[in-house]
Amino acid sequence: MNCWQNTAVQDSGTYLGFWVGPGKGLKSWEAPLKKYIDRASMWFSPKLGFTYNCVCYRTFVFTVLSFIWQLEAVPDKILQEEIVTLRKFTP
Image (tube, rainbow, N blue to C red):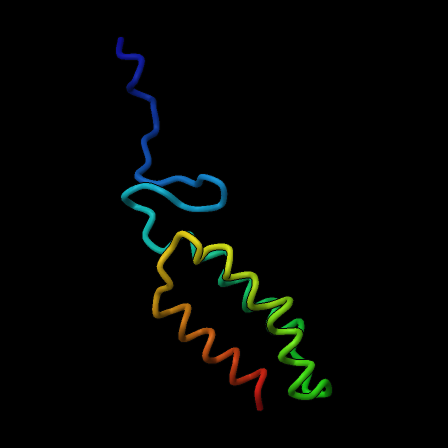
């Protein structure tokens, strides 16, 4: 009997919050992008004005993505979402 026959093999996995392996693709960006979008809608307020919206964006929204881009190249999808969010914060 082969003891390895029921062993599951994957082409990617997580290590310290980053996806590694040949099949990782853009998986490292999925959770941070969702958190970025959630935080952007939570912190944006048209009543605050431009200055305070910028402070909220830099402090609470932008920092979500900065952890991942330390080791991962930023894909176009993330840049496009950032453009949409920045337009929202700067009416």
